[in-house]
Length: 98
Image 1 (cartoon, rainbow, N blue to C red):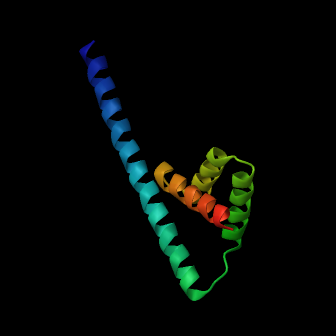
Image 2 (cartoon, one colour; image 1 turned 90 degrees about the vertical axis):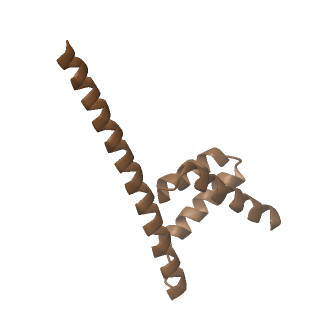
């Protein structure tokens, strides 16, 4: 019985550590993608994927699907929920200013 308890504790600890590592990797990937985006903008290299993404996001926003737009932005970029919401809110504001 005690072996089962110890085994469960070890598995739980392992899963916690792995989850933390996965979250760190996601943040690193998001940061690297942000840096690549800044570099390509600075060099004037067009990004067709970003144009397609913006077109889809603007379409979702104009249809009133902000939640779906946030989800799609997170899928495209790997951004956190907070970053995605702020990005979509900024897009929504820029659409309202036009």
